[in-house]
Image (cartoon, rainbow, N blue to C red; front, side, top):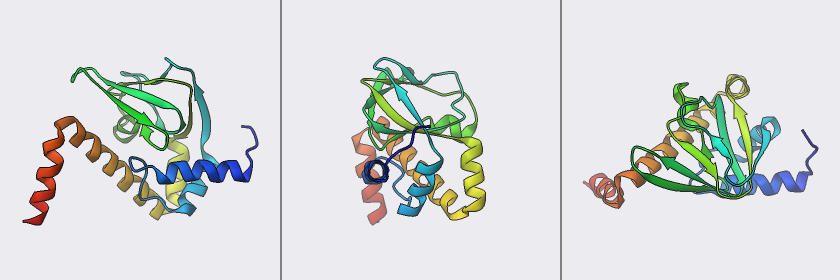
Length: 161
């Protein structure tokens, strides 16, 4: 792994922590731990980041670039960009990935494998809690986006009642 300047690492943490569709419940200290332990991966345009039918054994956090999430059962494609995660379903249930995630352009990502995350969560249980809470929020938001725009507004009005 190449040495990274403090300024560069801070800029990446800023991208990751500012993303509305990312790991929104992590603290600055959580991000420092994650960026210290994560492996940096690079993908060329058209390259698979996550392959349907194969386990991810971890989570990818996009730093730069965009990717498309191809959902075969829906015939739909969703876009993800810097600050967002992919591979989280396979990470959570330890089963093969449900979709292909393809780099639309050159993509840089952090990759956190299961053993590294588990050891961090054992040392810092609150990090684990915030990490999983963030993944739950990501999955909820993505499911609502697939169901349709009415689902989000129905949920909001139901909360008021």
